[in-house]
Image (cartoon, rainbow, N blue to C red):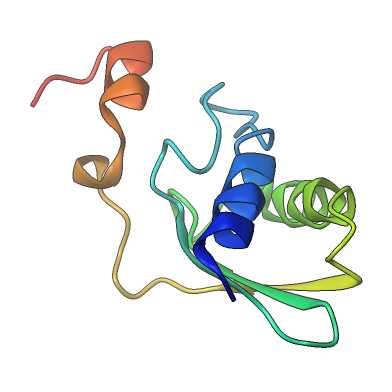
Length: 103
């Protein structure tokens, strides 16, 4: 997968906002990897801010909808992982400012 397509996929995922925090999942540092095979099957490896996140299903559906807008993507699988565990250090500068998190 070329870098331009990966950037497009990450850009689409920036439209997915964590409903509890009000910041997108990319800037929160929740998306660990995206991949797309020759058949158009996308795989997103991501985590959640907590293991018991009550909105996990909603976020997964929003990820699938966001990537469905890209013509190269035919279907999407979302792998939720908890290793490495998420921490506030994974957030972008933008997310830290938006949430008032200090380094």
